[in-house]
Length: 103
Length: 177
Image 1: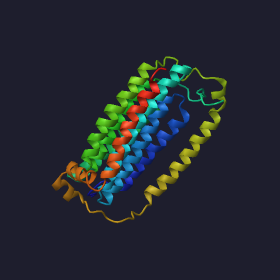
Image 2: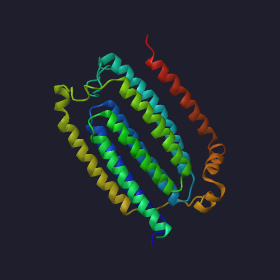
Image 3: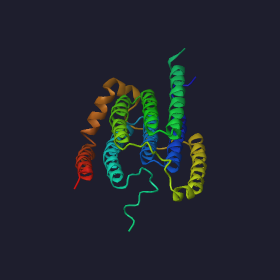
Image 4: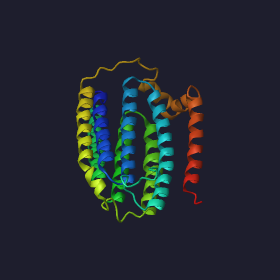
């Protein structure tokens, strides 16, 4: 019988979640849903960190995930501020219509 | 039923919930529904963190992701009213649909490669100094705390400066001229 959850299970689950997030980020046409897909991909990477740290009986995985969460929170704050500003200027949430930086 | 098989069963249920809700998150048309399914995904991943003996990260996941970030996203969705949603598409966007589907198929090919890697990998790297029994004796949060305020003190301070810059940046970006 299995003593612990094998790291391979977690890696497969993380790959599935990352792929779903990547496909969503490519296919969706709503900046906020694309943003949520990016958060899902970050979460899949966090899962790999934790699973590998468990398999190697190390604590660095948890510390790195802590830093990734910090960066994700900052990214959410700044990114959503940019979305609010772009919506105010262009009145659209379609990333393919946002072309403020095009001369 | 012994505790190991119970853990595996809980893992499989949480994994299925995470995959199903993330698929629902990607496919829902209404962004509010996507955000709510995303919260369920985050809770399922938090359960898996608990099974992997990372209690601090599980609680931080629920507080930071499911609490703070998703609250912010829901707030912005309701601020930026999206009744028009993404269906008000121009001809330009429709033309690029084939390209985007091609990229999505390429992503699936890359996923199959990752799957092979995950199934046939050999764990390399040094074994760390924190086996689960020792960490559980001291306490997970205490161990992470002593690492954060010891070995990783400088990155921790940089992270706090990053948060400060993020707060100021968000305020400056949305301020009206």
